[in-house]
Length: 298
Image (cartoon, rainbow, N blue to C red; front, side, top):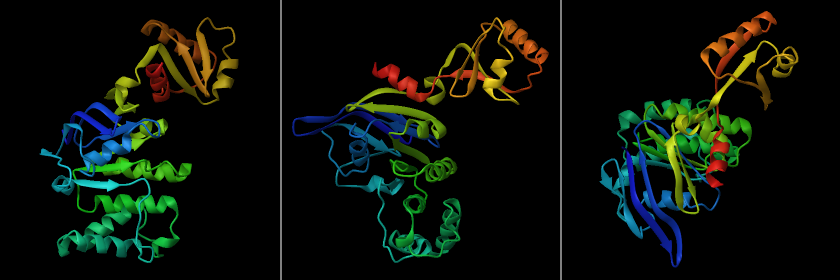
């Protein structure tokens, strides 16, 4: 495990912000850390960075124990805050060159690594100064900076929260690509973002971890339900099956049918063929992460 968080509690005066938190984050995974604003996500990340003292418990990163004020473990970490700040009159390339010098990166590695990262985050052709960048471009540059020294852990604090759909998609794609060389700890309150790219998800609610598991386990299959897509819309397919004996419904434009056995599934597919419906895909119906969260909170 790249990160082990064991029985971590954090209090500010009488207020207990983190309550006996336990997490284990495996290598080369994207770990989604979800929860509402104010749940304590940023507090835990600051503890992981050694910026806040723990009330009790331990945090280990890459085999080393995190100690408040002695941030040697940060050599293993790249960090992207929710609002990254830069020198505004530098270009992206100039800024990364400065970071490479400050971090004592060997001269022979600087140019190829910077070009690799600018290509990864889609800024390799951008020549304008950072002051002209959009919020999304600054987030992408922040990821490049955080990855510069090949950290074992990349911590991202709400990297998509203030972006439009295109900007969010770009960040998620970059984080997915970064997984090949590091472990990503991805904090967000946008459940659909975590659902798109995370291998494992934990939810923090009122300072307590209320679930942690592989995403595929959390999104367990709904009993005996399957989702079909056709060469026509779900509504058009349903209209051609008005007199069928099968239990069918449409949910957010998805065609979902209850099929209790392999035999029943084959019979239904034969009926689709008889009614000239061409199947494009079929897969088990799983719970959205949002539904999982609502069920747990209830």
